[in-house]
Length: 216
Image (spheres, one colour):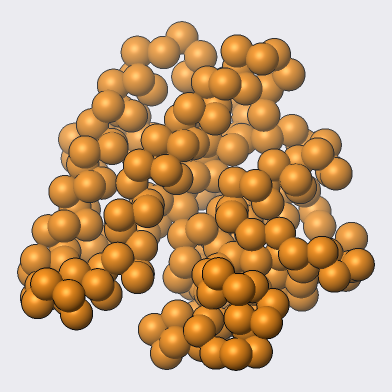
């Protein structure tokens, strides 16, 4: 698996998810940065790799392209089963996917860079408007997520039990991204506790945005 190539951007939360999974699995990879704010992901050379022009994109040793962070992470979990990122039982897997998708499907898509840029270019939103938009959608997702985590008997040190998995990967990346927009985490003690547990682990630390070669 030393021939894996990850096209990503240090500050992209979806890229962060994949980096965490790679580190947890102990898989080596080549890091290829694309500066999103400079539009490098829209250059012809990258579009030839990933026509969607988004990060992350994982290229396998035979040239196969995988995009979409959750699909990539689950692929890595299947080819390198230890440590597992999903529970063995069907209900447990559904629960973890539910938590992960509350972040990856409901919060992130409306808060990613191209949406925030469109708020400015299409609707004339200013900096304060963009920040308020970002915070609003985080809060819309984190309020129910906090309640579910706080009340679920499945919640342990991490989102599901006492080992980190897919949901924790999504949670950690989102909380890290929140910090750039000054999201108040005081209303979310359970999410904050789980995030702290994640960030105590070497894989999460090594994959963190500030520790990447393209960090600014």
